[in-house]
Image (cartoon, rainbow, N blue to C red; front, side, top):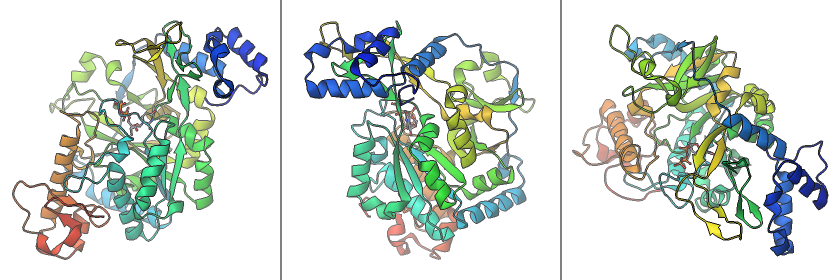
Length: 477
Ligand code: UTP
């Protein structure tokens, strides 16, 4: 939703103001007379870049009452071998996934444009120091995994990093200062997601400064259009990449470009795939993957009534157990199709937020209660457009522990604990001895990203592991 509507003449200032007036948004120019030349140019450029009719349509559509989900059933899920899945099928999927990686057909993409409001961290979330012993950033932990995949499969894994205007400069600067964490420059591709204006409860766009309309990043679903608009999809085509692994920056446990997942996706000839974990209890606020009208979709927590949330099968398991953890695999051709028809396929969702703005006299107002609707797209809304979807179960302890809050559940403390516990489990599974009692353990993910890697070190005691396994604080890079 970036560029001005092509059919509307907004080239001159008069035409632009007339365009805004005719849509009831002329107030965005109300401080025009006070602005200096640079301020006027900033506001004019921003206003001309906004596709106003599309923005207003999106606000109107998101405000309209929506029927709750109905007529759906649990989605078919490829269960883990521990839950009845066929181990041989998992082994075949892993082989297939490894072949895709070795053929250079896969890229990874992280969505890192969010504002980390709940965490309250002053900087892009990916720069947050999370390594339990080293304080390595979320980005560095992920870069290690990407390096490891390149080494293991003999082909570099290009990494597409989505930022937003709020996180872009700081993210690029962080990568540059850290020499891209050892990854070749050409294999780390930054692209910026679009923004969308919020509106007050009367549907009026808001000013954050006399010369600036307030816009927020357009949600993690903005990744699909940003991949198209930025040319990243063309870049993938040039590299022969047809399979895209996507994940969120705040999950340090992500199993990066998991060969098993890639293999299941490929074998199903899926347009888009989903990983799900067992919900811990009916009240856990995650969306569940379901099937409605023959299509797979995510049903948000608020859409699922209390009866469905609590429903159990005869064995006592939740019927809607498959919580979506926002780790997907896409066919790049499908991303192109959805992004090209985004207004129809990727609806905006509104949430009410307190948004700082200006009063009639131009003085800053910081509301303590919501005063506006913010619009966002969600990546899982692409699912119903997919002809074929593969849903794969993941083990929560091994793959999902997001950093959302400053403390309590889903915080740096819980993520570090889970990261350390998983490293310990890999080391124990490999029969390596000498892990100290309750102390934190951290591995270098470029060397160890699973029990097989730990075994492949060929060591018997942790003291022989060098920097691959740390059990005491230290910063290593
Ligand atoms: P969240 O919805 O948890 O948002 O994003 P957040 O910014 O991390 O945290 P809060 O809600 O402000 O506290 C989940 C993932 O989607 C990305 C985030 O960077 C994170 O990886 N995201 C979110 C974007 O890339 N762009 C967005 O517009 C929103």
